[in-house]
Image (tube, rainbow, N blue to C red; front, side, top):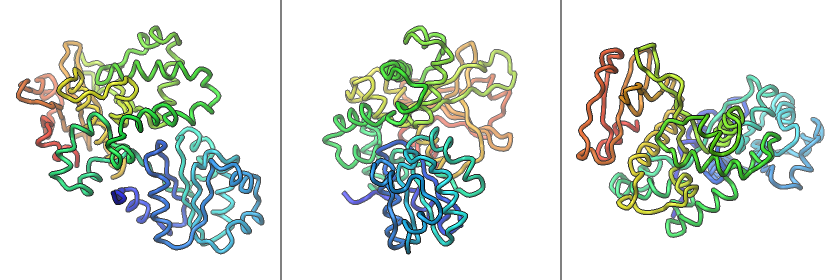
Length: 376
């Protein structure tokens, strides 16, 4: 299968030759290296420094301006992969940016936490930041065409959209087990606050089993044997490793609105299913609704990230169990969405409490038939 064109490639091209470092973060195995290499090759010869390679690290670390000039030579493009592994990488990038003119620096990393810690201060005003996630619905629609992509939808809900899963569908389960076991939070284990990786496994399993439900930190802490503060810290770290993300509730002091809970979703359905060890087809599952919700919300988050959307998004619920899955707020206008895999089974009516208090400009029940209206 030919390479699937990524939205990131165009976003990077738009900022090329902007006299700033192009900084790309995202989970391992989503195609950062392949995408950036493809673009660098289009631009001509480039220098590749691999932060996972001990020899590359040894040469590149502790380098002053003179040594860096020798390393770069006549190259006009320098790509530093897994940059968070390199000591003092922020300072090194600052030296290249400030002292060696005419160089396009492209930098990738798998840990938002480490990248931020090492680069935010030295690269203030010197960088454009981008994310890359597993493949998106729109990228796959462009590659396969609308008809074939729609036929693939049940597989996406079960196996997710990591590039290797899409290109090697017969090996999807083993690929996902390998990613979930070896790569998922590899960089987090280097972090000083993580002492017991088995606790992360317990936490991820608990989160995976609660998919689509509100998360109670106190209950989580009891079930995995950690205090609440540590549970919240670990979830924050899992967010920075691009494993999960949190969705907050919309609350504007309307009576009976829930305003303290959070929902937690996975960036990829396949990773979630690998964690719980369940790759059964949809017709044999009890969690199809939750998988559909996770798929749509993760796809929407990818889309909004790639387009640099400036609004806010939430879920909404009251203590009387009235709920709306997804709400967007743009300039004080609200757009409300409910997700139904099989809408014929349930009649959907948006709660009066919500519509009267927020006066949404749009309400939509999102199904497999009209999902493209939501994912744009």
